Length: 316
Image (cartoon, rainbow, N blue to C red):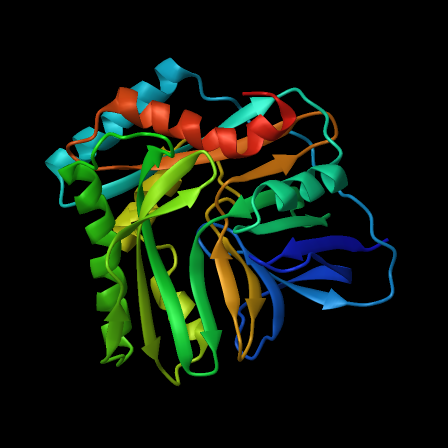
């Protein structure tokens, strides 16, 4: 039996492909639908064939981080930021809920609720069943014309509270990181948009678009910029190592990337996602910590982000 791949690009109709996912060492020369985990160590490419699609459920071994545990973890991460040369860290958590859903029906509801997001349903015995609605472009290209995005800082959509210096700084870290990494790839002329508010369902973010021309392959660009400070931290290598060693659980495909890779690519960061099990779900949420972060407010941010997925099934 085969795997499942359904996806909908923003403003487009949903697509269904028949075939199976295959694990590969890298994406050099690859053209098609790809998926990675957070660190990029695990890479998968979808190969079409004539198999019959089937849902694949792994055993649910995810724990649920309660509020007190999260606040303690956040305090530890912030102490690390004030005592070391780390400038930003992302702390994420999983919300494990005993609730059975129909992945196919839920995918349809996500498509209808978030027409401007990249919505997907993927299922394979290699990684189980995942569903998401991501607002964040990792790279979009048409030949040598390319577009990347800095997305950081979070507020409830209806909030009238002004953005703080902490959130502006958090966003600036991502912009500066992308400019630095692109410059290292000999990208000289970058067109940066003004910073603006981007609505993503129940939350909004600070966003800056960066457009440029380059003959460097999209995979080599992505290999330089992922994981960005929006999902890992600054500096990149130290932040990734700290998260893997101290976050307390395995992120899996959460904060990896997925989408179409080729001469015309459209790849998204795997945010606002859940892993589906036979009779439960694990929703993944996170937020950026700096030395000025307040753990209680960071907890509230993760709760608001969870609403993107949970409000559809009346669980939040």
